[in-house]
Image 1 (cartoon, one colour):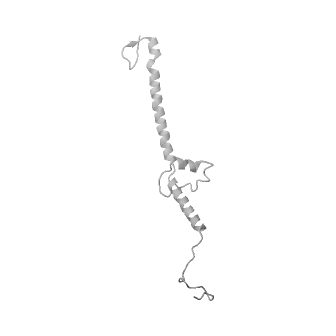
Image 2: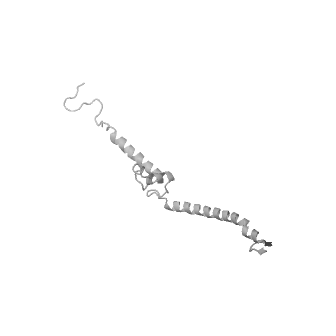
Length: 123
């Protein structure tokens, strides 16, 4: 007969070596270790998340992927700003482009009915 630490009563040698609670204990420890590892990795990922240099907000997952993806990095624009700041930049550039493409409005500093120069029409 064997007396095991943490057990009440005596056990036979085969019962003591069989250790029926060992696998349950191992699964519980493994689940706790996996949860801790997952929490640690999430904290490390958040610590590495870039911050916008203009407004100070952290990048969203989508914007972070845009700035780090090899194929998308060319179209991501300024990689140091977050999504809303990038959208503001794009809107500002678009407005400037449209304003530059629009024809200038003529300035009418002469009164109505007045002709121009020497050859004006007499009424």
